[in-house]
Image (cartoon, rainbow, N blue to C red):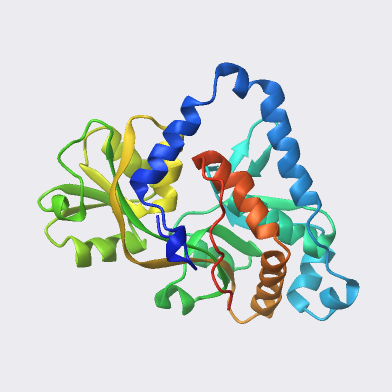
Length: 308
């Protein structure tokens, strides 16, 4: 996987899968006990609660932040099903992950406590929810594109990825991008995956599906030979399911994720300043290690992308 900022930090999909396998193999039933899970949850909470809080002058100078603080909660558009980025913990009713953690840290910065309200979004609803101000911000592995920037202000980028290929764990026919020729390849409709497949694998038969869960199921059920999308989403899949694997090298242009904000407000400048702050003080790196790093068995955080 090519992390942004350093070629030395690049880890192939195969390498990450191997790391994940080693990490899982090292975990005995005792290691995944309730006390261990409780400790991990406690560390995550401590990290969020230790996040910085803006002073009154910083908040009052920004209309968007002032309104969020007045409301007493940050309304977030996101997901509850992403193993690495935002997964609902039924025991607490709270989402945990890299995106979820960032949203909670932003709430802590504005309000003084990590008060968030999470609304489920899809690739088809994100822009409308921002336009009608149903949410304050969207944290949802939201790729920054020129088309989306016509309707959305993006803070960031806060994370970078590339595309990768996922197949059944028993599949031996597909090992590279070239092997997709003539194959049925699932991706998410309205995502960058459709355009990327048209450019990089023009002989593939594209099966565009509404969301990640349906695209993954298409591979698992044999309706698609492969699934192409951002590698971060595929890492979620192999973390949760042993019947799929990532093959080949990451490919295509770097996919930068941004925090979606309502167009034309003063939110972008505020959120960018906050992002730079948590990158500079090491909070971004600690959150990555507590979420993505812990799940994939990777101990060294990548260099964060350049914000703005």
